[in-house]
Every structure is written in C-alpha cells, then in structure tokens.
Image (cartoon, rainbow, N blue to C red; front, top):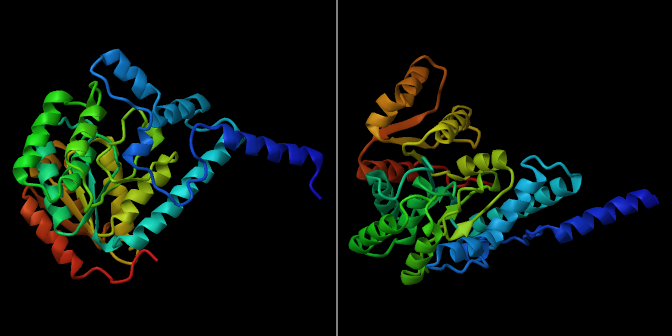
Length: 330
C-alpha cells in the first residue's frame, strides 16, 4: 500500500514534469529546427534579434538546464531529463526503422571551424556528394565541422555552384557561431533552398548549449546526457566515421570509437577515416600513434584510412558497403 508521504512525492514529480520548459514525453518524435528555434524571429536590429533568440525553445531549455545544474541537484529534474532522453532513444529507434542504418556515416571535427575556413567548404562538398550517393550523414549537430556536414546534406540535389554560393553567403554574414546572425543566416538558406528528399541526423546536447544546434540537420536528437550522446553518435555511424581536424572532443571520439572497433562491440568493425594528412600526422599525431598501437597488437580489427581526397574517402565508404553485415542495429 502506498503511504501518504510516497503519494506526495509522486505528486511532486508529476508537477515538476509539467512545469519544466521542455517536452518531457517526446512520444517518439525527434526535434527539427522549427521546433528547437520556435519563438525566434530574426531581426536586423541586433538587440531585438538577441532578445528573440533568448526566448526560443532551445534557449529556454538551456537556461533551465544551467539553473538546475549540469548534474541536476533535484531528483525531480533528474527524472525529467531521463524520461526526455529515453523518449529521444525511442524516436531514434523509429528513425532507423525508416532509414537504412548501414548507410549512416559520421563526421567528427572541431566546433570552432569557421565558415571561412577552406576545410569547412571541403566538408560541405564532400557530404553533399556522399548524401547524393545514398549515405546518411550524422554528426554532433553543432557548429563548425558539424554544421558543414549537415549543410552539405541539405544542399544535396542542388548544383555545386549553388552550394558554393551558399557557403560564401554564410561566411560573409556570420563566420563564427559566436557571431550574431549565425542561426538566422542558416534559416534564410533553408527557406531559399528547401530540402524535401534527403535527410541527415544531428545529435547535439544541452551540456554544450552555448553552441547552437545547426538548423541544417533535418532530424535532431538533442539529449541532456552528453556521455550517452557521445556513445550514440559513435554507435549509429555503422557505415564509418570521418575524422576532420578537431581538438579535445574529437580526440575523445577517436579513441572511444577505436575501443568499439577493437572489441567488435557491434559485431563488426567500421572504417575510421582521418581527413587531413598533415593535421593527423604532424599537428596532432594521432595517426602514427594508432599505427603503432596496431603494429604492437594493442589495437585489432581497425579499418584505417588517412586521406586528403574526398573521392578516395567516398570509395572507402562505398567499398565497405559491400562487406557490412546485412542485419545490424537489432
């Protein structure tokens, strides 16, 4: 029999779930840009633009997240976040029931890569091509290399000239995600070039909520728990992962992915492709380290590629499609 104090605790939890600024029960639905940025009305007036952005759904959830603590102090809040994130997992399962997980390819890289950086354009054009070849791009769903990934997927089916013009336009309006107009400029591109055929999956987190989620991802699985989010990104990229230049977060992902592949955690190993020979060999010498670990037997089952050539990367991914198990992700 439930005691009165227990009933009161249960009632308190229910009231908390109703009061939080995010939808706790996702009902099998992922986010999209329209929902995350609901309430945001871009304005040429900088102060009005900032005020409007601060009032959108995503911003309000982030403020609440920070107020309650990155590690929630209240049991009620912990429960609300857990229920929300479980709903996102349910939605992801439904998403992959409709989209072939074998074709899911991840792109990892620095959030601080500017829209003016040549690497940004390279990632955009590569991901555009991969999407047109039938791959589905996934990333951490933020700015920098992540935005470039989804911009490429969004522009799939358009001409290269249109895509390059969009890259120049975005670079002129807001080179960095810290610049006013970063989200607004993306929304303008989306309005001008609607995408109705191709999809991409962004998996951001409110832990890094100061980095806005890229609107270009057609499906957004935003989570509170970053540790879970990192594992999800690396797990669902069944078709392989491309590592573009990045810093601490990208390095973490490399070695976490290597563990999955070494132990064949999913039953098979997926390609790990390092894009940027000089960066991964000299600037951040991960490539020679992994080669050494393979040579000494500390890493096994690695499918490794180091390349600066998007065409070579595409061929590696296409070749892997001939060998990937037919039934995965069960």
